[in-house]
Length: 65
Image (cartoon, helix red, strand yellow):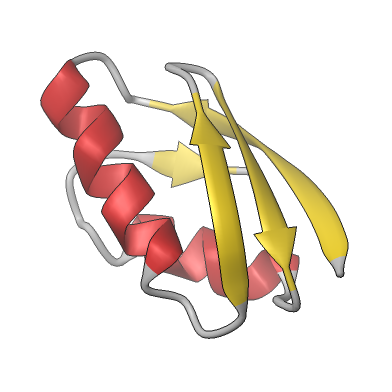
């Protein structure tokens, strides 16, 4: 199992955090997500690209790197 750290931009409210957390948890292979306004730490068998695409798919101005 790997741990991937992401830098988040555009996340500012608790609702934003919930939306991003939900999007990340829905990605196949994700075991757990810890999140803050500017970062996310994801554990599981998943690629960084899949996580970045999940955040972008929200189309709410959030980005992940």
